[in-house]
Length: 308
Image (cartoon, rainbow, N blue to C red; front, side, top):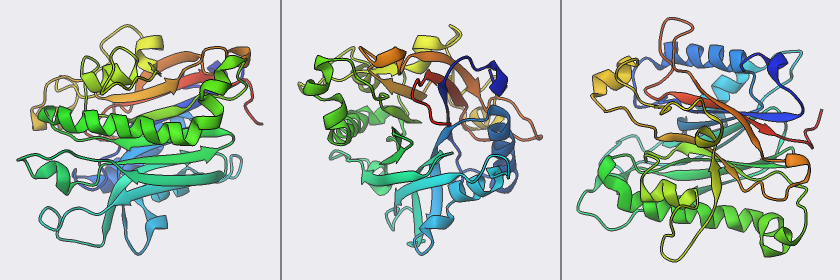
């Protein structure tokens, strides 16, 4: 799939990775591994989490560094939408650091926005000390979102509040495109693309909610889980201690917690939004180091209106 010649028909290629550019070691080497993988995959849009920048230089984030290295004369510049917040002083003493997510696109970004995501009252202070977020970029007629949700297995109550907020924010952006009036006839727009490190397994309430398998607080929604729809039938672990030294060092069990989600394709003209293929990416080394403590994804989605 990684060879651009393997694409059949107009499609959108999405890459997703939590890059761990601040908290995990070896960033100077790992960032070159990420560039090598992105050159290999040739995606159209890229969603990244655990991106950081200085408050005084938000346009010089670690995502911008990657975008600058991906630019080539025959392919043009990459465009970046980054959004993040500051850690609580008790967790991270450097008040000048923003920590968040980013969307990279081959096309100019027409608008973008960053929303902090909520946490609920808890005896554990950690979830409220980290700036969990949702970042939106509108590019080439696409609405692409990247998010990072509360991290620990016991943080499901925070993640449930966060996915409700994520869905509300997306609805606010997509109201005219995907609201009730838009479903009465054929839809000509692409559905939303929602990627991220959700820190939640497919069986969790938060992921079941996003894929229409349960309601939360009377709210319901629907996104396609690209791996479930078009993966190779394996579990698709995005953390695996058997093959990944970072996961082994952290002693975390095998989990699928990173996703590419695609909005409802129903009644879209010419099959727009159909998930064609999904595979793991960044799961083996191309330069001698691993890209991240997470494994990423590469997904192809049918896009009849794809611009040249």
